[in-house]
Amino acid sequence: MSARILVVDDEPDIRFLLKDILEDEGYQVDIAEHARAANEKRQSNMPDLVLLDIWMPEVDGVTLLKQWKASNADDCPVVMMSGHGTVETAVEATKFGAYDFVEKPLSMAKLLSTVKAALASASKSGRQEFREKKEEPVGNSRTVHQLKLQFQSLRHSSTPVFLAGVTGSGRRIWASYLSELSHPDNPMKVFDPDRGLSDFLSLNSNLYIEEILDLSQDQQTNIYREIQNDSRQSDYRLILSSRLDYSRLVKHPKILPALASCWRKAIQIPSLNEHIEDIPELLEYYVNWYGDYEQLPYRHFGVAAQNLLRNYSWDGDITQLKHFIKAILANSDQESIELDEIQQILLQTDPSKPKDPENAMQFSIDLDLDLREAREVFEREYLARHLSLSGNNIAELARRVGQERTHLYRKLKTLGLYNKKKS
Image (cartoon, rainbow, N blue to C red; front, side):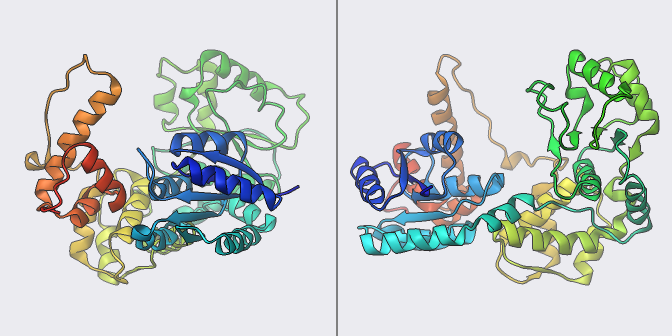
């Protein structure tokens, strides 16, 4: 079957020209005029390659690329299409996961050679390796070592396993670790509470439920029946999890009492503060993780930096540590990470930090406005404030609000905030 290509461009002439040319070359082609349409096309027909324009209304191409890569839904190669004024941006997009870029006006020879090279790079084995990549429990502490031994002792069993641990402690990582031990060739399924259980309880793979409290009473009843079903013939198991331990879960009004009683024998996943000696290994692991999967630069935490982080109170647990690592890798290309930079990023990523009143914005929105109009009011006030704090410097504004500059120029003009003399 020929490869499927999605062309995303807000200019209809370019969309239909590319469609005609690529179809003449034997490809299947879908077209989309903006980000929303592109997402819909990807859901209905997963492409083998995307040709993505940088300049688009509402959501620009670079922002859309980042969203796709952050979702880890697939590793479909993306080739950026840029006008002369956005070549620099297109080159920058390769750092966020774009395979390559082609410059407008398009050279068909260059375009077709790039398409062939991008499709060749996305071999089936490479895509499968990407999809099957899992996070692993990391650490050499006694706590982590003993927990690994406990999970290894369960590898040949199909009995249900119950996990308890605070939010962010990595319960899903440990569940995946157990599933990988017992069924390395059949990835664990994660249950979606918004879907029915009938599709999952056939259990042709291990089934993980992240939070038992998210299930309805009927779903809990069905799960409990499955747990009690001694006649079920299956090599696969249920792995059920909760942020609450038995003493708190049994008192919760949303839990089926019989199901709550199962947590008497739950495996407790420790919080990060219970094994802070593993922080150096966690830092190294996730620095490499974000380098491999989000193309963030490799940066080095020195001994002083590691000691500071070992003595920090990680209220958001491993999830907070990961957010910190990702933020500090994206903050600079400097290989060495200094202590003052760490302090700054910790303040930005700490959900419990006190808010600086000078860094807050309050205003009223008329509830008679529709959502689009209300969003425009917010964006105008938000960007006007940041533009002032940035000294009307667009590069600094882009850094502050986390947006690509070409998209910002268009947004500022739309909102009446763009003044060429000041920029």
